[in-house]
Amino acid sequence: MPDILEGYRKQKEYLICVDSDGCAMDTMDSKHITCFGPCLIPVWGLSQWEQKIRRRWDEINLYTMTRGINRFKGLAMILAEIDRTYKAVPDVDAFVRWTGEAPELSNQAVKAQWERTGKEIFRQALEWSEEVNRKIGAMPEEAKCAFDGVREALKAAHETADVAVVSSANKKAVEEEWQRQGLMEYVDVVLSQDSGSKSACINALLKKGYCPDHVLMVGDAPGDCEAAADNGVYYYPILVKHEEMSWRRFPAEALKRLVMGEYGGAWQEQMVRTFRDNLS
Image (cartoon, rainbow, N blue to C red; front, side, top):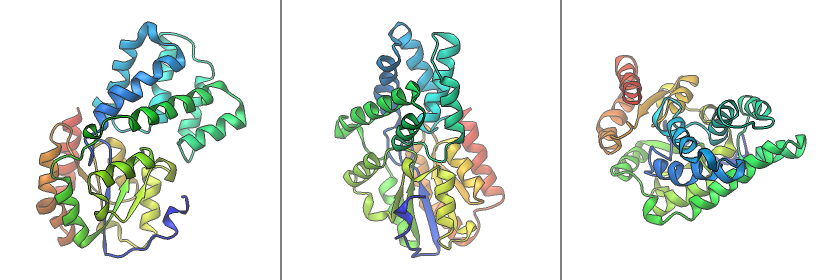
């Protein structure tokens, strides 16, 4: 875990962890459809199959149980499929293996792996990721808005809990988007792709002294739910296509139950079941 947590101090008894893209911010669809998928095509010379590959990228990253996967894991999945179906992708097995083993999946990490191995696929992955970041940075501000209800929910949460952004997105983009939407005043720390996996981030936060049953992860993707389960903390889903409703219900239902010690058991099971059914 980078130095970002060294200066962090627990201030309240409760902790709310919140994902960014597709959870607090209504940016996930637009980023994948207009940035992530299209940037694949020139880097790997895929124009012959562009529409099929872009459609498959969106399926992997938006509409199935791999929604919200780290960008490099999503890249490994699509490149493996391209290698099997359309054209050879040299060293794809090495890239897939790296994404499954590396403790950190970020531009810095992929650059270090390229320099260490000299394998072209890592240079290409870095080129793709940097171009994605550039295109995201060039998106109009009106395309980077928070879902309705987020500000009110975070304000309520911050009155009784510390709030941490736990995202697999680029940190600079996350901070800029949250600042622009006026959300950073309710945030105590931002952890992103260069901080390690979401599970590792929650684990590091727990070491600051929080009881697991005082911690709630708010997310929209299976990886968020898994990160919560890995650490024995609670999970509250922001349901795809029902994001505003999910956020409006958060203060009076999820936050209240957490503070009253009534979040576990049947309620938590219901939340997870509803989440999975919504993505199925």
